[in-house]
Length: 267
Image 1 (cartoon, rainbow, N blue to C red):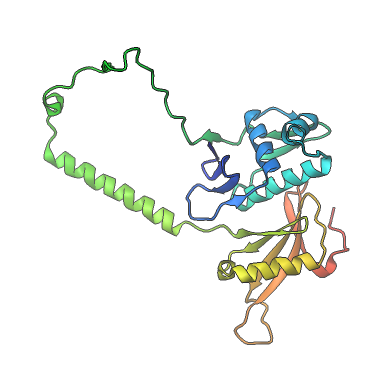
Image 2: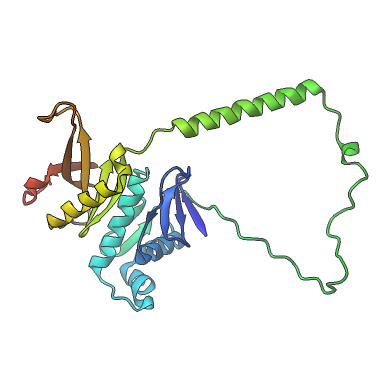
């Protein structure tokens, strides 16, 4: 079973992944509790789901330990991945002192229709005709269409197909991509050719792990590559490791260098 959010993000329940609907990006795997939480919110979209109900349906019923910390981390991870995949609107809303809600403004579609059930025949050996007999020639019941209209329709279809192809192959890529986890921090990187280097990604995550950084629910780590601030070696760009926090009340994000780890963000 698959769900589509705002015609952009595909939630595959079977694999527990979130990905772009255009199939040009690798899916992001989420944890089993996060998957169960998202399914629960989808089933009750527009209604507030209490923390107690979430604890039972996501953790307790599966023999797992539930806690406010585990729930907050799941919600934070889902928000981060959904935002990285291109939906800037708040998908999961916090209802203070009650629980969480999948916002009713978010368009959620079931994009994988169930297979229709085939009625069993009481007499398997006798074929059952469920439609009218086909005429000897189907073309006998079709109106005669001038040939010029046929060519015009084909030309229009080719123009539409060319436009779709241009949109797919020239669509702008997301500005940030998911890199992995370092401790309880989610690590993203501005789109760069370095993302294709798995050894580089592993080293970056290992470095972030060594810093023993603790991220709150609205914080994450961001790696940026820039040529504007030149390095000592000519032609070599610099990488910047930032710690970012979402200030929801101001609708902005604030990023600082890791050396300012103990400094507080603006409130």
